[in-house]
Length: 377
Image (cartoon, rainbow, N blue to C red; front, top):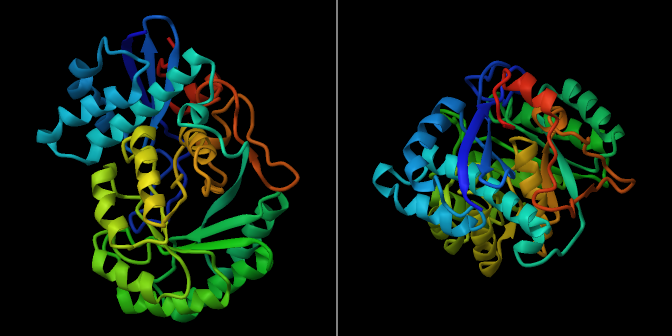
């Protein structure tokens, strides 16, 4: 089975707010779907955390390398793309685009072998996993109301992030966390994401340590991105001294970037994003490296239904990955699938056991959010 063509289309019209200082608008494109077409008619699906203009440009660069390649060898083909683009710069749009291609190739391999991707990764440790609702921080009363509504949907784990946190004083930060804990209840898992990869993040190590002490009082399960993404030494010190687990890594790409962070014990929880990091092939290597260093692997998943489908398969293939991120209220997750995601009575998501990613897309919804671009044929 050979790669005949790779198509892409950006998702627009319902882009959720991200809490960034330069806020996203609904028409902004930050997520792009990728469709790998084969000479035997199968289509594999992937997703890229990059706008479609950059993905199209990357595909033009990569096309001589992937056209006619074996569509059933995701790791080898993806590594070929990485190895032949070092001179353009490892990371960034090229690596992000290779991520989408790699996810789609794993989807194709699963379809061709009639196996779920998780089994192809070595075996399934679970057939369901707990999703945590990922929610943008707001003023305490507004946030509490939204969390109560999400809890009523059946979610039992929650992450609040970005927004005003860390920008208006310790009192507001604590009021937000207190309101969230009261809204979700004592038994729910609650995580806090400072969002320090935002542009010109104003806080540093001492703020992060003081905030970690406060979060411990509310039994927060982890403190995510409390420091700027390049502050390795500060992360190491914070992880050693903070009374709550420290999480991060969503902006890093490829396993080589993660290695010094894992060796330095900078994280308690590492969060590679499959739509950025190099795809499933890279993410599983990072996940096993993390396990070797005693670091918990929980995928970062602020992206699309294709990204969530990949995260579910990855969660099935690692013994300690018992959570996946679920971007709450995004049509790019909820509407573009043919069959809605459903929580069971325990607040868990089933991990598809059907071939590949187990992802079936709603053609009409995809056409709506890609402005009618032809991905399926």
